[in-house]
Amino acid sequence: QSVLTQPPSASGTPGQRVTISCSGSTSNIGSVTVNWYKHLPGTAPKLLIFNYNQRPAGVPDRISGSKSGTSASLAISGLQSEDEADYYCAAWDDSLDVWLFGGGTKLTVL
Amino acid sequence: QVQLQESGPGLVKPSQTLSLTCTMSGASISSGSYYYNWIRQPAGKGLEWIGRVYSDGNTNYNPSLKSRVSISVDTSKNQFSLKVASVTAADTAFYYCATEEFDWFDPWGEGIKVTVSS
Image 1: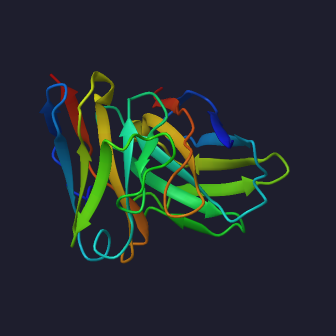
Image 2: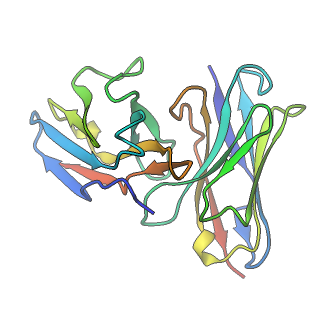
Protein backbone atom coordinates (compact mmCIF):
# COMPACT_ATOMS: atom_id res chain seq x y z
CA GLN A 1 0.00 0.00 0.00
CA SER A 2 2.95 2.34 -0.75
CA VAL A 3 1.02 5.30 -2.14
CA LEU A 4 4.19 7.29 -1.47
CA THR A 5 6.81 6.34 -4.04
CA GLN A 6 10.51 6.22 -3.22
CA PRO A 7 13.42 4.77 -5.20
CA PRO A 8 14.36 1.40 -3.70
CA SER A 9 18.05 2.26 -3.54
CA ALA A 10 20.55 5.10 -3.59
CA SER A 11 24.30 5.24 -3.19
CA GLY A 12 27.23 7.59 -2.95
CA THR A 13 30.84 7.78 -1.89
CA PRO A 14 32.03 9.46 1.32
CA GLY A 15 31.75 13.23 1.07
CA GLN A 16 29.22 13.19 -1.75
CA ARG A 17 25.68 14.57 -1.69
CA VAL A 18 22.74 12.25 -2.28
CA THR A 19 19.05 12.97 -2.55
CA ILE A 20 16.10 10.65 -2.01
CA SER A 21 12.74 11.52 -3.51
CA CYS A 22 9.22 10.79 -2.27
CA SER A 23 6.31 11.23 -4.64
CA GLY A 24 2.72 11.43 -3.46
CA SER A 25 -0.52 13.20 -4.28
CA THR A 26 -2.65 16.20 -3.37
CA SER A 27 -4.29 14.31 -0.51
CA ASN A 28 -1.02 13.62 1.27
CA ILE A 29 2.27 15.38 0.47
CA GLY A 30 0.46 18.12 -1.42
CA SER A 31 -1.57 19.20 1.58
CA VAL A 32 0.03 18.02 4.81
CA THR A 33 3.39 17.67 6.45
CA VAL A 34 6.02 15.16 5.35
CA ASN A 35 8.44 13.47 7.70
CA TRP A 36 11.56 11.40 7.13
CA TYR A 37 12.84 8.52 9.24
CA LYS A 38 16.18 6.72 9.33
CA HIS A 39 15.95 3.02 10.09
CA LEU A 40 18.40 0.25 10.72
CA PRO A 41 16.33 -2.99 10.67
CA GLY A 42 15.72 -4.38 14.14
CA THR A 43 16.26 -1.01 15.82
CA ALA A 44 13.99 1.91 16.62
CA PRO A 45 13.39 4.16 13.60
CA LYS A 46 14.68 7.69 14.18
CA LEU A 47 12.93 10.92 13.23
CA LEU A 48 15.21 12.77 10.82
CA ILE A 49 13.06 15.54 9.34
CA PHE A 50 9.59 16.81 10.30
CA ASN A 51 7.33 19.40 8.66
CA TYR A 52 9.17 19.03 5.33
CA ASN A 53 12.40 20.66 6.41
CA GLN A 54 12.72 20.87 10.20
CA ARG A 55 15.45 18.96 12.01
CA PRO A 56 15.01 17.60 15.53
CA ALA A 57 17.74 18.41 18.02
CA GLY A 58 20.83 16.33 17.35
CA VAL A 59 20.32 15.88 13.60
CA PRO A 60 23.23 17.55 11.77
CA ASP A 61 22.57 20.36 9.31
CA ARG A 62 24.13 18.36 6.47
CA ILE A 63 20.75 16.62 6.41
CA SER A 64 17.91 18.63 4.88
CA GLY A 65 14.40 18.23 3.53
CA SER A 66 12.32 20.04 0.95
CA LYS A 67 8.96 19.87 -0.78
CA SER A 68 7.62 20.91 -4.16
CA GLY A 69 3.99 20.29 -5.03
CA THR A 70 3.22 16.64 -4.38
CA SER A 71 6.84 15.52 -3.98
CA ALA A 72 9.36 15.77 -1.18
CA SER A 73 13.09 15.18 -1.03
CA LEU A 74 15.68 14.30 1.57
CA ALA A 75 19.24 15.45 0.95
CA ILE A 76 22.32 14.22 2.74
CA SER A 77 25.57 16.06 2.05
CA GLY A 78 29.06 15.15 3.22
CA LEU A 79 28.04 11.49 3.09
CA GLN A 80 29.44 9.34 5.91
CA SER A 81 29.50 5.60 6.53
CA GLU A 82 27.09 6.08 9.44
CA ASP A 83 24.48 7.32 6.95
CA GLU A 84 24.11 3.81 5.53
CA ALA A 85 20.55 2.83 6.45
CA ASP A 86 16.99 2.63 5.16
CA TYR A 87 15.14 5.93 4.78
CA TYR A 88 11.37 6.32 4.79
CA CYS A 89 9.13 9.26 4.02
CA ALA A 90 5.74 9.44 5.73
CA ALA A 91 2.65 11.60 5.36
CA TRP A 92 -0.93 11.60 6.58
CA ASP A 93 -3.47 11.08 3.82
CA ASP A 94 -6.55 13.26 4.20
CA SER A 95 -8.66 11.13 1.86
CA LEU A 96 -7.78 7.72 3.27
CA ASP A 97 -7.40 8.90 6.91
CA VAL A 98 -4.24 6.85 7.28
CA TRP A 99 -0.56 7.42 7.80
CA LEU A 100 1.32 6.41 4.67
CA PHE A 101 4.94 5.37 4.41
CA GLY A 102 7.03 5.28 1.30
CA GLY A 103 8.44 1.91 0.34
CA GLY A 104 11.82 2.90 1.76
CA THR A 105 15.17 3.68 0.15
CA LYS A 106 18.26 1.69 1.06
CA LEU A 107 21.23 4.06 1.10
CA THR A 108 24.63 2.49 0.51
CA VAL A 109 27.87 4.35 1.16
CA LEU A 110 30.38 2.95 -1.31
CA GLN B 1 12.60 11.99 28.10
CA VAL B 2 9.80 9.72 26.89
CA GLN B 3 10.80 6.12 26.24
CA LEU B 4 8.71 3.27 24.86
CA GLN B 5 9.11 -0.48 25.23
CA GLU B 6 7.13 -3.16 23.44
CA SER B 7 6.38 -6.49 25.11
CA GLY B 8 4.44 -9.63 24.34
CA PRO B 9 4.81 -13.14 22.96
CA GLY B 10 7.28 -13.61 20.14
CA LEU B 11 5.40 -16.59 18.71
CA VAL B 12 1.69 -16.79 17.92
CA LYS B 13 -0.19 -19.67 16.31
CA PRO B 14 -2.17 -19.12 13.12
CA SER B 15 -5.81 -18.09 13.66
CA GLN B 16 -5.05 -16.88 17.20
CA THR B 17 -4.91 -13.30 18.48
CA LEU B 18 -1.65 -11.40 18.64
CA SER B 19 -1.46 -9.17 21.74
CA LEU B 20 1.27 -6.62 22.36
CA THR B 21 1.77 -3.92 24.96
CA CYS B 22 3.76 -0.70 24.80
CA THR B 23 4.88 0.73 28.14
CA MET B 24 5.68 4.42 28.28
CA SER B 25 8.16 5.89 30.76
CA GLY B 26 9.20 9.47 31.34
CA ALA B 27 5.68 10.88 31.02
CA SER B 28 2.11 10.06 31.96
CA ILE B 29 0.06 8.52 29.19
CA SER B 30 -3.00 10.39 30.45
CA SER B 31 -1.41 13.84 30.28
CA GLY B 32 -0.99 15.89 27.15
CA SER B 33 -2.55 15.35 23.75
CA TYR B 34 -0.89 12.35 22.21
CA TYR B 35 -1.71 9.74 19.65
CA TYR B 36 -0.31 6.32 20.43
CA ASN B 37 0.57 4.38 17.30
CA TRP B 38 1.45 0.86 16.20
CA ILE B 39 3.56 0.29 13.09
CA ARG B 40 4.98 -2.94 11.70
CA GLN B 41 7.61 -4.12 9.26
CA PRO B 42 7.33 -7.57 7.68
CA ALA B 43 10.63 -9.20 6.83
CA GLY B 44 12.12 -7.71 3.68
CA LYS B 45 9.38 -5.12 3.38
CA GLY B 46 8.77 -1.53 4.35
CA LEU B 47 6.97 0.09 7.26
CA GLU B 48 3.19 -0.24 7.52
CA TRP B 49 1.03 1.88 9.81
CA ILE B 50 -1.45 -0.27 11.75
CA GLY B 51 -3.42 2.33 13.67
CA ARG B 52 -3.52 4.70 16.62
CA VAL B 53 -5.44 5.62 19.74
CA TYR B 54 -5.80 9.16 21.03
CA SER B 55 -5.39 9.99 24.69
CA ASP B 56 -9.21 10.27 24.91
CA GLY B 57 -9.64 6.75 23.53
CA ASN B 58 -10.63 7.60 19.94
CA THR B 59 -9.02 5.35 17.34
CA ASN B 60 -7.98 5.33 13.68
CA TYR B 61 -7.08 2.12 11.88
CA ASN B 62 -5.50 1.21 8.56
CA PRO B 63 -8.46 0.07 6.41
CA SER B 64 -6.45 -2.94 5.26
CA LEU B 65 -6.36 -4.25 8.86
CA LYS B 66 -9.36 -2.54 10.44
CA SER B 67 -11.56 -5.64 10.70
CA ARG B 68 -8.94 -7.49 12.77
CA VAL B 69 -7.24 -4.77 14.82
CA SER B 70 -7.96 -3.14 18.17
CA ILE B 71 -5.81 -0.52 19.94
CA SER B 72 -6.51 0.70 23.45
CA VAL B 73 -4.99 2.70 26.29
CA ASP B 74 -4.59 1.62 29.93
CA THR B 75 -3.85 4.80 31.87
CA SER B 76 -3.49 2.94 35.18
CA LYS B 77 -0.49 1.04 33.80
CA ASN B 78 0.83 3.81 31.54
CA GLN B 79 0.49 1.42 28.61
CA PHE B 80 -1.25 1.10 25.29
CA SER B 81 -2.01 -2.19 23.57
CA LEU B 82 -2.49 -3.81 20.18
CA LYS B 83 -4.60 -6.84 19.34
CA VAL B 84 -4.65 -8.46 15.92
CA ALA B 85 -7.18 -11.24 15.51
CA SER B 86 -7.11 -14.27 13.21
CA VAL B 87 -3.41 -13.95 12.43
CA THR B 88 -1.70 -15.63 9.50
CA ALA B 89 1.91 -15.89 8.38
CA ALA B 90 1.45 -12.52 6.68
CA ASP B 91 1.27 -10.93 10.14
CA THR B 92 4.82 -12.05 10.94
CA ALA B 93 6.76 -8.82 11.41
CA PHE B 94 8.67 -6.49 13.67
CA TYR B 95 6.08 -4.46 15.57
CA TYR B 96 6.88 -0.94 16.78
CA CYS B 97 5.00 1.46 19.00
CA ALA B 98 5.44 5.22 18.62
CA THR B 99 3.99 8.40 20.08
CA GLU B 100 2.63 11.23 17.96
CA GLU B 101 2.25 14.53 19.79
CA PHE B 102 2.20 16.70 16.69
CA ASP B 103 2.28 15.36 13.14
CA TRP B 104 5.20 12.99 13.39
CA PHE B 105 6.27 9.82 15.19
CA ASP B 106 8.75 10.44 17.98
CA PRO B 107 9.92 8.52 19.88
CA TRP B 108 9.63 4.91 18.74
CA GLY B 109 10.12 1.75 20.72
CA GLU B 110 12.93 -0.64 19.87
CA GLY B 111 10.46 -3.05 18.33
CA ILE B 112 9.47 -6.65 18.98
CA LYS B 113 9.65 -9.52 16.54
CA VAL B 114 6.47 -11.56 16.26
CA THR B 115 6.37 -14.81 14.29
CA VAL B 116 3.12 -16.50 13.34
CA SER B 117 3.72 -20.22 13.10
CA SER B 118 2.28 -23.47 14.37
